[in-house]
Amino acid sequence: MGEVSTIGLDIAKSVFQVHGVDVAGVVVIRKRVSRARVLEYFGKLSPCLVGIEACPSAHHWGRELQALGHTVRLIPPSYVKAYLKRSKNDANDAAAICEAVTRPSMRFVPIKTREQQSALMLHRTRQLLVRQRTMLSNALRGHLAELGIVSAKGRNGTAELLRIIADDRDSRVSAAVRGILNVLARQYGAIGAEIASIDKSIMALHRGCEASRRLAEIPGIGPVGATALVAEIGDWNTFSSGRSLAAWIGLVPKQHSTGGKERLGSITKRGDRYLRSLFTAGALAVIRYAKIHGTKHRPWLTALLARRPTKVAAIALANKIARMAWAMMAKGEHYREPAALAA
Image 1 (cartoon, one colour):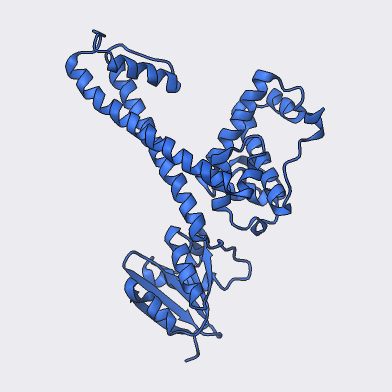
Image 2 (image 1 turned 180 degrees about the vertical axis):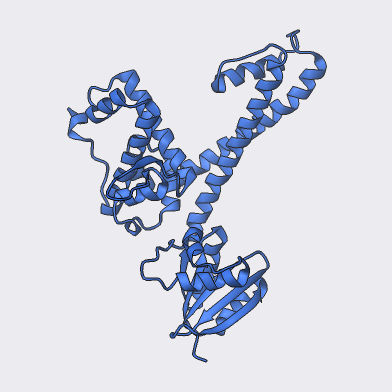
């Protein structure tokens, strides 16, 4: 039995599975370890390569094991699946991770710092509250529509409904219904106040980060998108090109090519859904501004909108914005206005 050189660690809530092999690939460890004893167990091992499936808690364990002298690699779960043998269980998962982490062509996820995870918690909390506010808005619209009261789309329409609910003199809403809807209206207002508070925290984070301020110079990226990018992507040189970043976000077309024939479909929607939504929303904002103020200084966007629907053009523009962001951050530059725009 040789000394362990590589370990596949399958993490869970309470019990972790360890699968270790020596330099010859012979299994030397196959053991279950409780969560409370993981660091104690790895502290007794000589430094080795440890593979873990990437997930939010994996970053914590990665930092802790690195502090003990181990080399930690986080692997996307979809890349581990190909190495899973037979039935899925903790022992087989750990063995698959141990096999996958040694592959020379394997791609790994950089371990996030505490600061990055803290910033991402701000964004995830904001995203959750925005969804809850949308749910309340839809509930208010649906209930009042049953009474024949319909408002315009968007926040202005919701604000009009809130005024109707608050107006005791409006005879279209009975006292019993108004009492019920007031509960939803109070919840809607409280969540809006919490979102505003988180927005202030994100703005403070943005102002204190030089990289975030540089990213916000790009049309289509605001403080929310810039801080999310900085928190999600620690080292921009992890990506070999801007297209690699766009592909990671899921803004490139799917391929189903064979026999020398290229077949491209819709975007892959892989990677980070939150970043993809921010890039798409930013691209739609740029297009909306261009339609109002004219697109004569944006020849590429003008030609694209002439031959493609707005949402298709938005995806293409989002891809372009992502590539610009990578070029700026990887080279340490500021945004430069294209010559066609400056004219």
